[in-house]
Image 1 (cartoon, chains in turn red, green):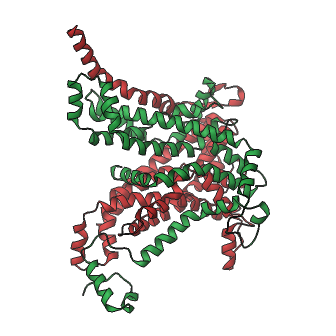
Image 2 (cartoon, chains in turn green, blue):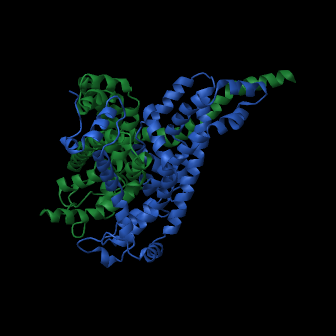
Image 3 (cartoon, chains in turn purple, green):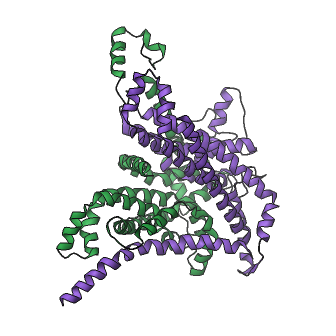
Length: 305
Length: 299
């Protein structure tokens, strides 16, 4: 009896950990990893849902077509433009807001919550509200611009104006979140660094650039990489900003991003093979950008020291 | 001479308080916020709140009142009419219910499985533990959006399109949850407590149930909050797979994508879709802010 119990105990101690981590790996494997890898296989096929799921191996044909598709290059350009317009000002603003929040403040929690509020609202809600604010005829932004003699601007109509508007939506939603992340790291910086700097007569601005920013290096890298991964996948904002349910990103595709182009090819044209080729290319682009970003921000932050 | 960061404006103040302030300024960090700090922060918060406030204003007005210059800035008395119109013109009630079912089941499952896996990774010794943990963390960096076509094909095969299972099942576990719980339980549960439990003849699952779960409660609350909000706000995948059985975000997007948009109707929908999250935020905002800041240090 005792022997059986001991064996069971050993089995429990040795085996049960695997049982506990199994659900994660099982579910992730089926619904996360497998689709991602299978996308690669689909991308080498002419796979059209309208043919009843029939498919044929075509090798690199989808990729070749993509490289000659002006819509693809257009969407790539739009994605990069919106990404730069939203990420750079966003992270700089977040740094400044974090710096402001890093004072001794009354109503500290309320201020932090106020800054974070945009982030808890959904992309759909945010985009709808901003689309109305950016309205041509009755939008508040045009009204405000009108007060200083500008406009009215048809925000959806042009490349530059639509990119600016979409970047504003992204910025509004994410700046506060990044500010809180910076704030957390700022609070971990040892105080004596500032005391020493103050003794040496450094101004607060000097302290900010010579102490705060270099100390935040890992966090700045982290936020840049995360913003890049998210920024290159932007899809819901340009889809909803159009105001119609067509995924072309405006009448001239002036704000169609790669992810939106993939969605259009996959779920409107039902060209699964082609859409998968776009997905894998986007994945590659994201990886390249994330690594480049990591190296670049590490270098810049190092130079500050 | 001490370098003062304050603009010359301070020199116009009476000398005594100015002196006191400069004495306090040196060797105190973080510094006390000046009037300018508060002014800037209040302006930023106003900018954060305004779009939401404005959607509330519009949803309480008639359609005619909204198409005016200068725009209306004060709430009117038509909020409940507009809410009734939203429920009349779309199946918004069902969409809200769908969202509650989806977000609720995902939240319970993520918290349960993450705590289970986190317990194993943080407190149990087994072969391949490190490798598996790194694998789990690495998966959180993979952009899920890109596997969406085969995932859709899989759902078609399973016959799950337009069924809530298509959104719930892939969301039952998250790499973030596992990582979060591993970090937390590593610190929160003393090894001695587990050893004592084993001495008393507890099975491993018994330890999980009686020792780990109670200890995990604060972190589980934060993880649950984040998971719920994320599931509630999710849009892309539900849009693809739930065309005729929408969640609230999908219903909202179809409300907004007509050829002539009814401003008041759409923004009332926005308000309704945001309200549950807003209520959670009002009640538990402190924990949410804390959770983000905590996650940042670890990340």
